[in-house]
Image 1 (cartoon, rainbow, N blue to C red):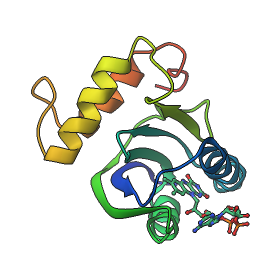
Image 2 (cartoon, rainbow, N blue to C red):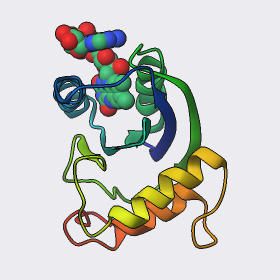
Image 3 (spheres, rainbow, N blue to C red):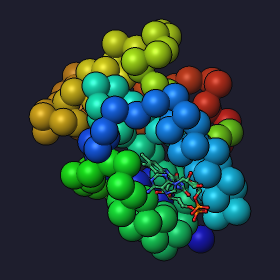
Length: 145
Ligand code: FAD
């Protein structure tokens, strides 16, 4: 297995309900568990940012399926790199909807998503690298790095 992390950005195609989010999360958890994929999905201001971790062939093929989903559009991969460990090893898929949750990472995650949509940097780092860095140093997520 060649462990990689893929991060993409996409725009919700319509106003999604909490039921929509639950459906996405349930199917993602179920499928990702059988594929050996871990990761996290972030949502704010109509934008998704998703991290997929797993074998490079598996995550590429999963991404090709996800990008065709009508619930989002304008999907673009902003990061695809080998990884020495999983940042989200505890989660077959985790979801953080920033429009509903305001935890300690709220400000930085909003900045990361905004920078990704504008093609800018966050504290001198690409949004994808900053995102991985934020969670790598969080003991709750940090079990395999
Ligand atoms: P199915 O059994 O075909 O579908 C399961 C249920 O999902 C359906 O009953 C339906 O309620 C709902 N559904 C499926 N497709 C659509 C659609 N186009 N529009 C509305 N409802 C639909 N899948 C993963 O496996 N892993 C992921 O990490 C993942 N992340 C996603 C992130 C986002 C932002 C989005 C929008 C989708 C994501 N998905 C993910 C879902 C993915 O796009 C496919 O819908 C799913 O993989 C299909 O799996 P299945 O064939 O097992 O599900």
